[in-house]
Image: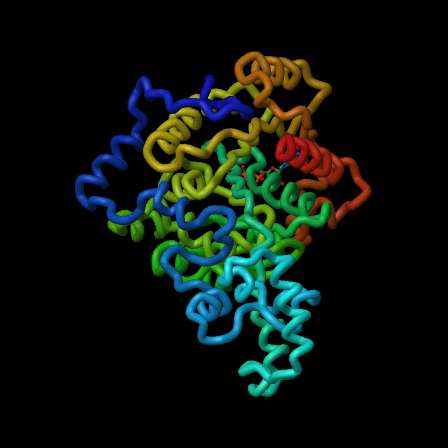
Length: 389
Ligand SMILES: Nc1ncnc2c1ncn2[C@@H]1O[C@H](COP(=O)(O)OP(=O)(O)OP(=O)(O)O)[C@@H](O)[C@H]1O
Ligand SMILES: [Mg+2]
């Protein structure tokens, strides 16, 4: 269980029993060798400072111009505006103080400089525009996964995303489930969307083209996503299609929340490969917990082969009916087996969760003051507290 630890990043552990997906992936590797998808290389070019700029892209214009010397460098601070630039001072080997003294001297000699002859006012304006805009965000990517159906993956993805958004975070949801339940929960008919994640994963369409703006931003699903696994199966780097697509928008969001289908196929593997964290909703029933071992094995396989950084953020007890002895026992079993990985927050049963999607809205919008909304606000607080811990 060491690999699941929230705090320390553990060493990968060998899978005792080979998971069927491991065999499937190995078989596919033999048929189509993967090229140019090395994660460490990708990370090196796409670290947090790189923001939304894709690997291999030319530098932003302002940076390119400054380094080529084709236009003057970015405007110096107000104190250095007149006279010698900081660059001139540093080129001559003098410190900043000496540069300022030289500037005073230059101002005094009354001679025109070359740059003053080129329409000085416009020149100054260009200098100010040339400041490159630094990317301010780099999204935390959270996948919501459990191959068991109906455990509240979609409900949790949407409501936690909206709770993040209420606290001022910019959030993108990804509906990676061909059922399109998350898309429907935001009032969008998956049968009517023209462009969906199918086009992104299979045809390399930029993900920004399938994002619609609702309570949160959402990259929509459609029924043809059901055919994406087969269409992608012969594609080079098929497990990394989503990870690659997200690079375009990672600089615009604080959180990217991925809803996955109830299976451990290629769509879920794409989600786990793109994610840094996984939240596992578990219905508080004994039988629902049995599938967790299978999910652990899949995660080990992903850690060893595709994404060493992914880890379980937490296991979330959902649909809790605290009045029943069975639910209490189920939580006890969860805590005995997964310890601190079990969230303190509990999502209790509430009819509002079934009603809200019919209205195309989250529970936080449908019944803002209700208990149901507060369960996910509490969960958002817990996740954010873990982030800053
Ligand atoms: N806390 C809750 N109380 C009562 N009903 C809930 C709760 N959470 C979710 N539901 C309802 O349970 C059903 C299944 O939830 P949801 O669709 O979120 O599960 P899922 O894991 O995404 O399912 P699937 O595996 O099919 O994608 C939905 O009708 C939802 O409205
Ligand atoms: Mg779902």
